[in-house]
Image (cartoon, rainbow, N blue to C red):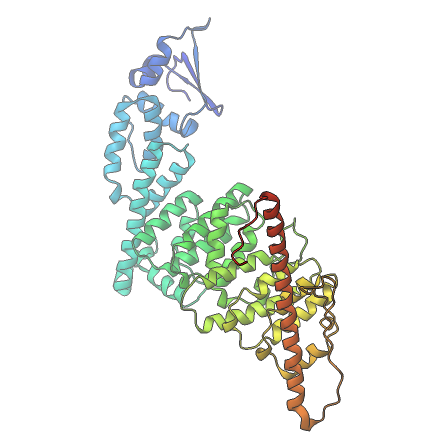
Length: 503
């Protein structure tokens, strides 16, 4: 940079570039350099070197301020350079430049869309500070204001608003109404501004969308933009950028009308998020959104592989959280029965997993209210498959699983199957008085003709009642054990005998 023949000052800008300047000229305007050079000593050749490691905007913005100084304050501040000019002048303490940047920002509402967007790009390239945040906030407000106003005008008078020139910003804004209509109708066509806003990073995108939501902009359009932004930006992003993109997407989707958030897309976000270190609070929001729309899910979407550290095949805890989020919503009605059928299908799918713990399987069985199930056929088959894959269960664990079945909700065929089921015919249950007594459920093989179907059903009812008595017996045994332990500890803790109430 050859500003003057006499250059007695070297300025290293963030290691990017070294600029040679005339000390007298630059110090006339810059308070920062005046302070630095006041206490400095010249080198043997008379030159002084100043090193800036954190100069905002780098060499480009420093050169703007330098040119202003060398032009005796005649360098013009315009929308395309005002952000860099302002931040550099603030750092260099050049009040004349700050006056001009403030005047330029006062005219911000008259800037074009492209000028506002460029200003936001420059803000995000600078180090975050109160100055850049303030500028970005002003620019973002104007950007959203321009977009929303133009969309409102285009919706009311699309035909008359379109300009004959395709380069006109008014043409682009007004014709956007057609894009929005096709967008709502499921067309692949997207509003033109989707691609324009892609230049913004997730932080500014989040601010942009918050302002759009505050202005009651169409939630469906915002939802579609978020998925479009995530799809386009995700592949080329770094790991940290991917986390920021997904967290911005999830946080914004969470505050939208959930009817505008496609359920399938949420599962797509879930698949991407599981491989990244997404914050727990954000993941909770994603799970809640999925859970609230669980009636729209399919079995395939629920078969999410378990985390790497888990031994079982599928992420059962995740599905349990989905279901709980769904059940916490009131007035589900027919949707609840649909979810009950889905959960029963899921239970049947995970039942053969040899690593699925009995307690977790029991949690699945009892997850849905029994009133939502018209039949217990599916869960009986699931229990049968689970017992087949887990031959080492204790009698207590088996009984807990069987207790989830309702005799009245089983078909005659299933009841007959239970009577012949070898996995249920011999369950050792401790008796209250004899700790090792074995109660064995046996159903005699009786040839019953078609005329004796009522007798057959009666026998099955008796068999079911015996099983219920076994469960009650086990419960009483456990209660007796607790009472005995309490009695022993009480007798050891006190030698005083209780007074006799009766002689």
